[in-house]
Image 1: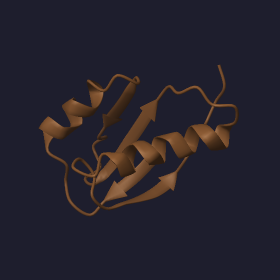
Image 2: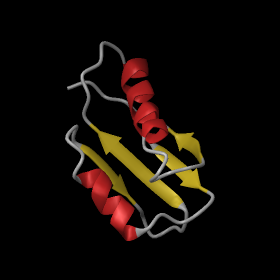
Image 3: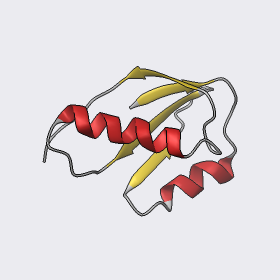
Length: 77
């Protein structure tokens, strides 16, 4: 899921997400204030998987307080 944030996230916060137990990764490409959140989650549908990623951001407001989702992709494995 690609999203934008109003404020830059500290590098420390980006690394903290990588240590999360559910295989999530939060990366920042070269574009400022644009981030990519990826992860693996068990879900019956792509919609549930996307809801899980957005829920992860909402549950971790200390990392991302305000965000706008710009693009979402889900694949099954």
